[in-house]
Image 1 (cartoon, rainbow, N blue to C red):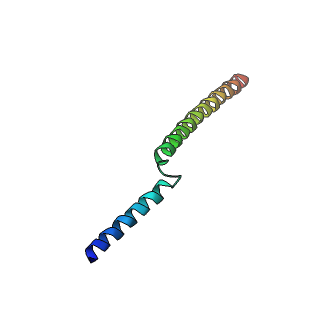
Image 2 (cartoon, rainbow, N blue to C red; image 1 turned 180 degrees about the horizontal axis):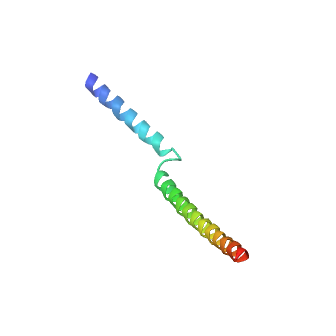
Image 3 (cartoon, rainbow, N blue to C red; image 1 turned 90 degrees about the horizontal axis):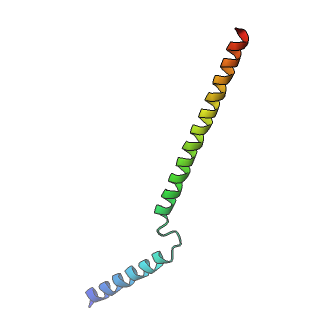
Length: 71
């Protein structure tokens, strides 16, 4: 009889924990968050590349202007 009570207790506890995990609103959001973070990282890299290109281009123009003014 004691084994039967233990099995019933374990099954009841297991069912209660499964029901509790289904009520969690954060369940299954990991993959979505990883995709969103990946998109933001890609955008940050693209913006960084654009800024670097713009600054390098302006620096080259300034250097050429200075060299032409001196020469």
